Length: 401
Image (cartoon, rainbow, N blue to C red; front, side, top):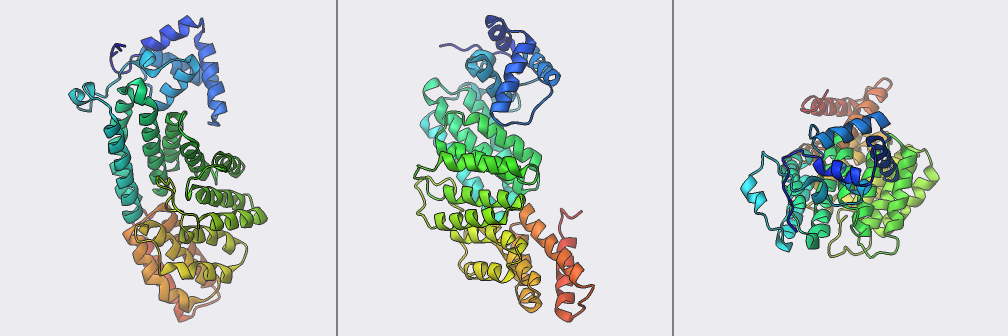
């Protein structure tokens, strides 16, 4: 089938499909609103949705992957029918216009994702964020250029890259971009297998933990249900960890303990061939459990749980190692074991500098607050030296503010 290429941003196909159904702009906007609700997206005023529908139809607003997905589902038709092969003028048009999307191209997209994930694990999100952003626009165009027989596979690959982008944005401390990219991933993954949809649900749950812990818990439970009968390696461990985090955010320490215990058990499973959560090792789960133990006042248990893992941390996970090192430092400080904390301090700060992330930075600031509070009644040398080192590290943080 020949697909005409409308000018970038053209929405003439949206108008034609809407009129075929006999819908007004208000009716199309209402259908979009229902789909957003079904996908558990934040509500948007009807007038705002109506204006965006009109702007897309008139070509004054370009529909991104999320809006294309919403309109395709609302109008029950294909992206090619609504938008044609919309090419980004900033990309090399001849390459994309003549692109033949094959299984090799899809494999290359997935290989790029793997490289970016490794870069993020080794060097932190700041470096990897630039790499993923450079790929996302091109991948969106390739999705549009893919024939029907490979459309599901290329959309799955796009979903995985968008989810990775959300993960990296979140670890950079940019929760709004993280949420936008994860919703884009959700739009791409409509027909993907349960493991991919579960991972994206887990990512959304993680981003929403502080904002809406109840919704986060529900989404994590849905993710767990999706893979409850699947052999997907360490992904169930990562999901159980998110259930524990959501329970902790709601103040339910009993549920936190149950989910953390489940996560620790599931983390001993063998990795799958294409494991989407190969980072969810026993060491990682132990680190993710420590904040809850500290909230529960179980300082010694936190130290005992995490200490054995520190000397055998997976070499490819430096970002998570930095977070764990700072959590162990905080556990020693919380337990008033300042001498042990001092012996670990330089290692933890060095690990953070190698692979900085928002989570590691938050741990560093929690240690600083704890020490400053304790120093009001304890002016001993160990706590004074710890304060000096932590203050110096934060003062040298380019994101300090």
